[in-house]
Image 1 (cartoon, rainbow, N blue to C red):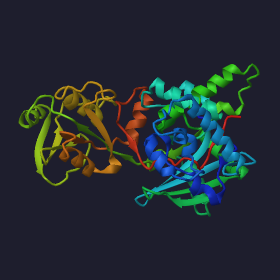
Image 2 (cartoon, one colour; image 1 turned 180 degrees about the vertical axis):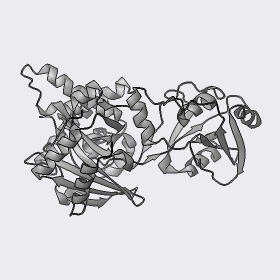
Image 3 (cartoon, rainbow, N blue to C red; image 1 turned 90 degrees about the vertical axis):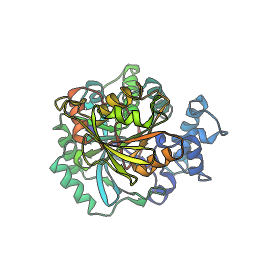
Image 4 (tube, one colour; image 1 turned 90 degrees about the horizontal axis):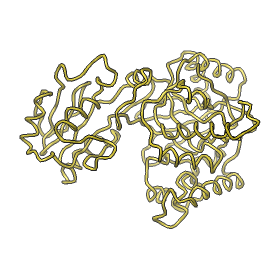
Length: 415
């Protein structure tokens, strides 16, 4: 069963939150972070993208960068831009996108639950990216950014959250660039804190939705600290890492689409003919066409949109991986026809999150940068949970969650 605890959050005063908060470290590059931070000394980019404190071109993996992150984290606290709460709380974080709001509980998740599989993952992680985040956690002795979990719908927690949602939030702002809304409440009532701990304690599993590398890094550093402490008891703060947990049914997963540089030596006609072996192919004309259901794909080629419907027998409804559209397209289009074997390393393919819309696929093909685009129907949260429960791993580049968690609303110290 899942173990969570409240913690003493480190967070900005109410009047500074919009100066401090920013997008997460992994959705923009160094120069974009440098531009967004501008001349704002309070931007959390100075801690989560600390290479912007150095000359342009400085590697984000330069040892000086991690040291600068820790230096700035301490400076933010010294100046009062970040302050630690005087007692342990849970917190509620709500995000609103396109009129839909999802409510997350900010908790201390248990390191051992990650190690033993109570916290379930659905993606592989890369050791180099894990090590980068581990260095960041070690340098700051804190989880500066939260990870993004899902939990099975829970009526008790839903009622508790809605009760707080009817009150004045601690933070309430519209983020720049995307225009999404963000609200934040502090849960200080002891009975409510006890209820949250107990309700999570009834859950057999929690699910990583987004932030697999941050989850791995946070848990591995916690386990590392436990091993290094000769007086380890098990109740130290490093035994927990910060997560925002959302009810699974509230989450929005967008399509994660593909653009490919060439047709592997085929003409357009040969490529379309090859598709007909496993798909029913229909020319939809020049207007943008979006997949309407599972196992339907949209293809953009030579200024025309096509629908591709996977034929019976090309997928296995009893296989949680084989039934996924990302697997079908990888096997039968990218690999079999286009010769793309490894989505993680092949330079002929790129990926476009669904928030950009199918217009972005059209733009990249029309510009001549790419030859063909493929749009997929979004994966469902149920599919993700089924895969995690089966112990299997999803194919790469399968999910795109929006909205992303803003960084800088809350930080968790490991001591």
